[in-house]
Image 1 (cartoon, helix red, strand yellow):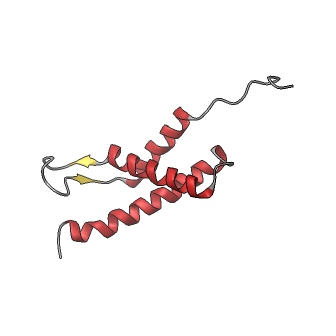
Image 2 (cartoon, one colour):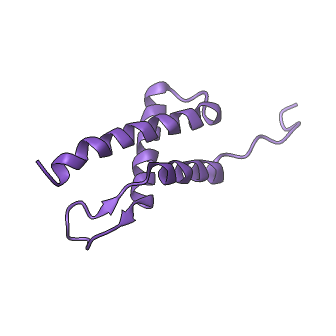
Length: 95
């Protein structure tokens, strides 16, 4: 076995590790979200973060044209969450 057959288990493991990390980040930010929705959101953000931070090593038309960096993807996910979190409600708005 070689190529993508050998890399797929490693990439999937990295994806699961990153998804778990994103879930930890989300625990405080979205405490009222249903678990199924929270997990799907974490998986989507993990996938997006991995594709945005992957290092290009070959032409686009080649299969397996990138290296993944789980830590860079985690930092990207954390930054994305921080930049897009909803603003806290104004004090006294409903008092």
